Structure formats: structure tokens, C-alpha cells
Length: 349
Image (tube, rainbow, N blue to C red; front, side, top):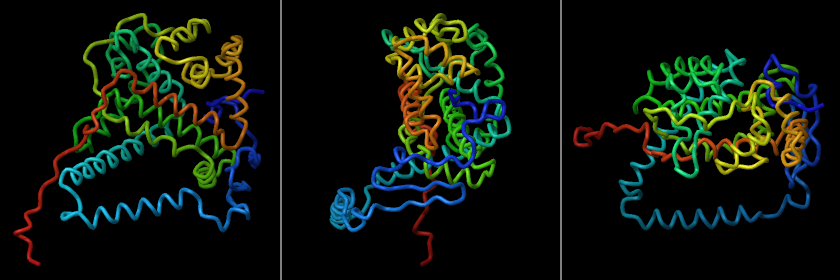
């Protein structure tokens, strides 16, 4: 039986029974692993215990160079570099707070997950490769766009994000968050919360043990590039009509053509099946009728039956990262703010 990505949401079928053991094939290539909820152990292979890895050597070499550069610098850190570090910290702290807000909101309303995924997809796939227009620019928030047939039943997801935005804007020090950013970050939070919920279910509902399992074997570390692409701007005009299929009525060929128009293929179509509507199982049955998409559907279904779900999760994160910035110019200074300077002459040391 195929396993649905959304099956960890209470209203869907369970993924796997608790206490499922990881297969050797999914373990780290240099380690053997034993998985039990509440007890996760890793044993290094004996032949590798006393050997320096290439990473160890490079890290030591890099540290030596970095130390030399610091010692040779009169001021240790140039002002421009220091300012860049401050901005990175500001953005990182803001992003962390946003993820916390979204995680809590989604946890309290898990049924909103499918709509959040489709909302993010539909905002992004308005991108037109030929004209370089459209994309994840927040246009779906506009009444003339959210009311289109392809966005039917997504109004609740938009209202959900409008409430979250009020809270986020209340603590932002660098201006209000754009809808373009918020919509894509909500999709990320929805994806992560679903994988985490899956891990918790595999641990018999024990949240602490499920979090430990997901931390140990999930792919949360793959989100780095996605989170760096933070600083999209909102458009003030709706994107042209006719660019987004009605996923529930479209044929597989129409879906393939749409994905091809934005630079993607059958692989990306299959991995985003959960974004095409609330009934992922039915969607995958339709996609599997196409010989080009079938192998990828089967690949991700097999992956979802494993503890780590690595193939599926990594490809999903990679595809969402690419689709979430189609045609967008990212402002890497967005949400930063000036820091009050300290008058050192007034300090009594």
C-alpha cells in the first residue's frame, strides 16, 4: 500500500507502525545504526575509528589559515564585515521567530496543511520562463487572484496566514514580512511539521521521542539554502490568468506541460504530489498512470515507507527551494535594521 506524505496529519492514514527499525541501507555509510524510540545509538565502524577523515584535515588547515588572517589584521574584523554579521544575525533571529510562530499556529490547526502547500505552489507557478514574470511574489493574496477557480478553497489558508502575519509584524524590528516570504515559509513549516508528526506517530505518540527520532534521521539540515532565500518582495498587481491549472481537474499531460514551462520535469511533479490537492493518494494514482512519472511516484512511495524518508524528503526540500524563488530578486538585507551605536567616550572603565 502506498504511504501518503500527509498521512501523519490526524485525518489521514498512518505512515508506519511504531517501533519500525531503520534498514542498513538508510544508515550513514560510515556508521551502523540502531533505532529505538527513546534510544538512538550510533556505532562507528572499527576500521574508521582511528583514522583522520579528509574533512578533519581540511578543517584543521582552514582553521590555521583563518587564524593567520585574523592575526595579520590590524582591526581583526573590517567594519563592513562586522555590519554584514550583524545583519545576518538580525535576519536569523527574525526567521527563527517566524518559524516558531508558524509552527505553533500549524500545530493548533493541522488540517490547514494541504491548503498551505497548494497556496505556496499556486503563488509560485504563475512564473513564465519566457517573459520572466510571475512567480512567488505574493500576488495570490490579492482578491482578484485568490478568487480564481484554481484557488478555490484556499481562502481559509490565506486568512490563516493573515492572522499569523499580524503576530509576526508585531515583533519585527525590520518592517512587516512580505506575503511572498510568508507564504513560502508557511509551506516549509507545513512540510517540517508533517515529517515531525510522522516521527512522533512512529514513536507511539511520544512527542519528545519523536522529535529525537526526527532530529537524528530527518533531513532538516537540508533547509539552509531555502532559508537563505529570504527577502522576496510583494507585487501590487495580480499575475496573468491562465497560468495555473486546476489541479483536481487537470490531466497528467497538462500537469507535465505546466511543470515543463517553469523548468521542471516528471521527477519534480511526483515529489510535489502533496501540493496538488488534499488527497495525495488519489493524485499519485493519477500520476502513476503516466509512464514518465510512474518511476518517481514509486521511488517516493518506497522512501516514505522507511524511517528516514531521506530520498523523498531531500528531493522535496530541493524542489521547494527552487520553486520558491522562481523569477524573484532576493533582498538579502530585508528585515535588517540600524543598531544604536554605543558612545565609548561615556563608558567609565
